[in-house]
Length: 160
Image 1 (cartoon, rainbow, N blue to C red):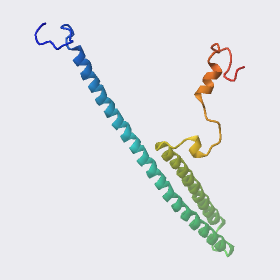
Image 2 (cartoon, rainbow, N blue to C red):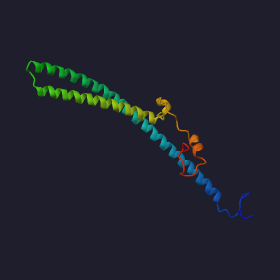
Image 3 (spheres, rainbow, N blue to C red):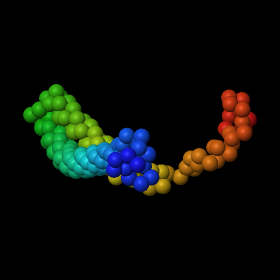
Image 4 (cartoon, rainbow, N blue to C red):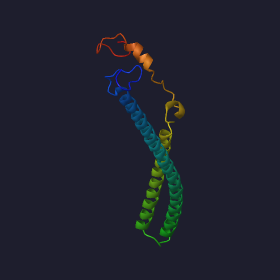
């Protein structure tokens, strides 16, 4: 035996086992850091999607009020135009304001829908069964059975 050699250890290893152990420990540490980074990214994505959803809901309320006030204003301007107090240009301007308010309302509703799907995606619930979409799910085993003995490029997955 040479020096303080441990049992079962070759005198010519040069610390390779200890090096692999240290390397494995460092790899585990890096994977833990990667996990925490991914977890933080998902949490940030959820918070962002929730904030966008809440903002879109508030925007819908605001544009609903804007549409209502634009309709009232247009009605008043039309009545004033009938008695000669307003011009046709004033009526057209009020109609344009109403159309812009309705467009903003539709855009806010669109933003709410997009934000709700973003939130579902962030929490991992954006899938066909959860959405109630009735289409067949992809099963990789079925596809494998269809092509397992096929020559490459000779036939398509349905067997033709």
